[in-house]
Amino acid sequence: MSQPLVPPDAVEDVTQRWEDGTRQAAFYYLTGEKVGYRQWDEAGRLHMEYRLKNGALLEESFYIERREHGTARQYDWDGHLIGTYEMEHGTGADMNAERLSSPQKMWVRIRHLMREV
Image 1 (tube, one colour):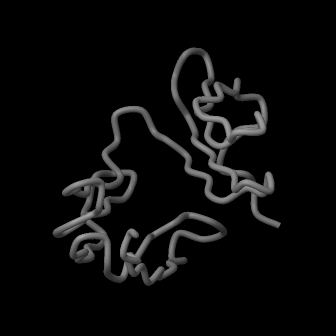
Image 2: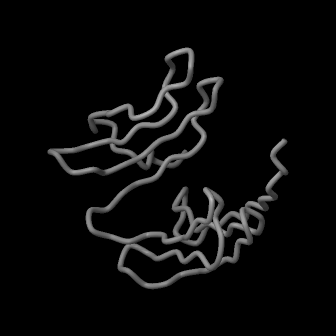
């Protein structure tokens, strides 16, 4: 089993809650430094978890009308570009270099924007 990305002794700061009051999103801090982020679905299951390194740009993307659009870039902990992907108004293949169990692990998420009615 891989180690959690957020240190177990980090202090949780819940920033968003679902309507029923359960956690939706939280940042984590150690000695005042932001070190992690977690997001949960409405059933309370962990949806995503990020480790944060102070001062390190890990991802940059752009949005038009709250939809990811254009070229997104992802960087390693040393600031080197490790990948890009294209989104068009919220639709595209999001290739994410998550450090889950090994530095080489990547996952691809195909996202397609459904039309709002």
